[in-house]
Image (spheres, rainbow, N blue to C red):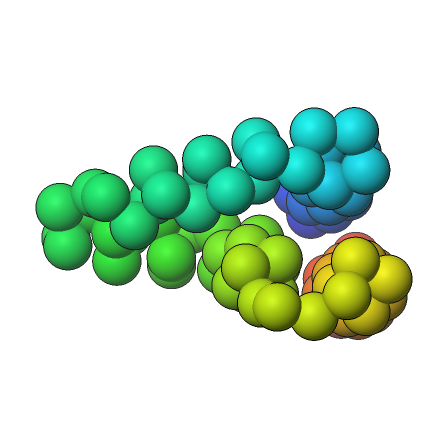
Length: 87
């Protein structure tokens, strides 16, 4: 079960980074969608998708593209490493 969750996490990070590289406007649309939710749903989305929501916060900054991608890659690697299933 932990392996499946880890694979899902890595897949979501892969999709996030692929969108950042190929369709950055989609990430902005996701951010706007999440921000437009009724607050109980916003809280639920933040709890369920915390690492990716942090990634969206980074994406919304005024930093250069390279700086945002570096921070998101570091977040993805760090969160994935912390979530790696151990015996």
